[in-house]
Image 1: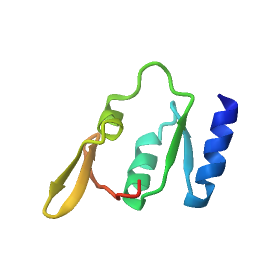
Image 2: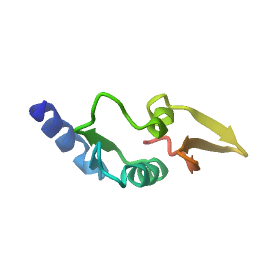
Image 3: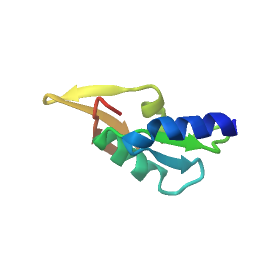
Length: 84
């Protein structure tokens, strides 16, 4: 597991990836920024159950509104960058 984590960090380093722990209180803000900017996020140390507000990201529930691609995270609609 540690070897895979290190490999992913090295692969995504050039893309300005962020690494967040599952219990980080700023996880939603970090994800929102990454989705807007199209940068990768590595979630580590997550438990059996994830926060329900992460479901739209995991299921890639993107929708179009006024020509924009959006995804709902918590109570916010976030512009979805296709490179995310």
